[in-house]
Image (cartoon, rainbow, N blue to C red; front, side, top):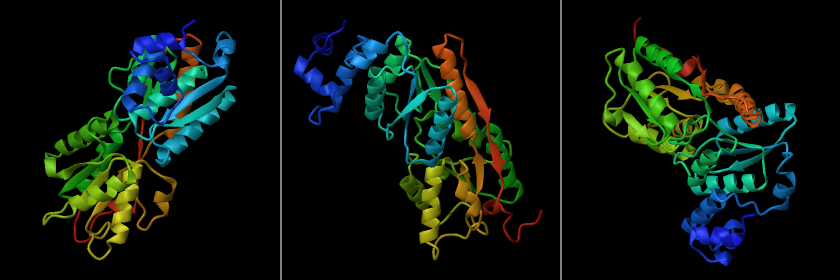
Length: 338
């Protein structure tokens, strides 16, 4: 049986330091904690008695680590995972990584210590060491919503290519001439996919996407406001903007609402569309055009794929399509003929 001394030796620290790192002591540096946690996972160190007693029988629990619970999409996804797991006789323990790789590793370690039967993870934009290690060790793992570079685990993602193409077609045919995008971090897989699909769709109409029309937020609400303000700050402003996730869209909407005197009117002067269809987008005035992700299906399939892995059945990647919901915010501007 692996002891705390073995973990400390592997991490190159004293046993007391290793113990503090693994129990969440506040005065342990993130670098030291990450090194100790990686050693513990590599050595299969399981300090808790529940893990030892239930190792052979399973715990009928699933760990879910999401990147940001403040994002309404992930809240809905967590509910879908919980519903599907409960129907299969499993309970779900949820951890919020808060877009922090170290926090993600913390929850991965804690959940594995508690001997969950498997993990469903929405990776942070920067992949964490323990997630790599868990996949390498063969722990039951499924990724959802975002791919993770070099993590050997099956994933179920929303593929918005067709819906984004349909959106760009609509914007072009309704007379929009200068179309911009607010996307996520350039290192995030989902951000890169949405930007690539958007650029390809514009190219089909021989429309370039200048660097000045691409703004990178961080998938958080405040960055939606900041990046829209940057797009509208110059002498030449776009007449359409696509916001590539729901949280940033909330920030963009907030900016427009609090700058009514200076901001362009929607949709008369500015078309606005978003990737993620939140329930209240159809209640706004004007109602907001959105690309709807199959959130419930993503959560359900993630659970089904994880249960297949636990049972030893083969699992492969899946991509689920999205649907464009056209609403008032992208209507044809006045004075533009068909």
